[in-house]
Every structure is written in C-alpha cells, then in structure tokens.
Amino acid sequence: MVCREWKLRFQLKKAKSYEEFIEFATDEFNDKLLMLVLEKLELLQENPFKYSREKLGKDIYGNTMFSTEVTGDIRILYSVDSKNCIVFIWEVGSHKKVYGH
Image (cartoon, rainbow, N blue to C red; front, side, top):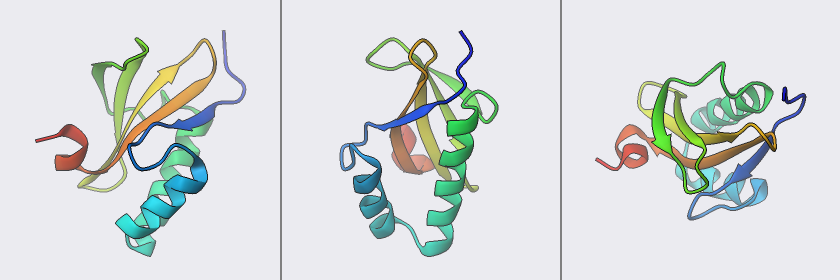
C-alpha cells in the first residue's frame, strides 16, 4: 500500500499533540532551530523514508525506528506505520538526548 497522505503522531513524554509539541519546542529551541525542526517534520510527513538517516530497531508497536538529522546535533527519532500511514515522532532534541547517551 502506498500512502498518499502521512499523519504525524507525537509520542514524546512532554507532547502528545502538535499543539503540545509547539509549546515544548518553543521552550526547547531558539527560533531558527524551531523553524528547522518544523520544516523537517513537514518533509517527514511528505515522505518519511526519503529523509531517514539510519534504522534503529523497532518501536513498541513493532514498527521500524529511524532517525533524521535536523542540524549537526539535533535529531528526530521516529517510526513509520506504513499500513496506517502514520509517522510516530518519539523524540526531538540533541544527539545525546535522542540516543540516550
């Protein structure tokens, strides 16, 4: 099945909706980084496979996890449910925060 439209679902501890994510990200990032993050999320919504940097195992639903680079240090950790056309956003932040090192 080819998805014509992908939906973003936020699974961050501090944000479960787009509105909550905007509040979180406004506090977390400066304006320039916030715009870069939002642009990357738009690209992931268009085609989540095109921008994947690396495969990282499976999420709690059994979907393949990926990461993508926003800037040199900022990453988005996400997974893709191809059957239901959903991109789950699990973490957004510094390399250290996203990968837990």
